[in-house]
Length: 92
Image (cartoon, rainbow, N blue to C red; front, top):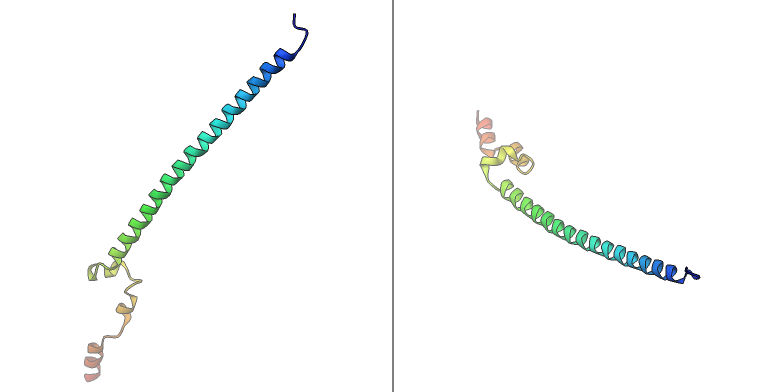
């Protein structure tokens, strides 16, 4: 019936081109969605780090009520000699 393969090769070429365009479009869409998701996560992480930094600074500067919870910042105050006690001890 068909003496030439030209109709088949043309149809296969069109099918291949259509599949290649679909795959390229799908890949681009997937990459754009991934990029958008990463941008949203980066913003969320930046917000989390900023919030944590502020909360840590407020907690460390809270005052004497939290001194026992944060010994690193107040270690010198715990072990520094008290001049009044030294004067009282030397007087006895």
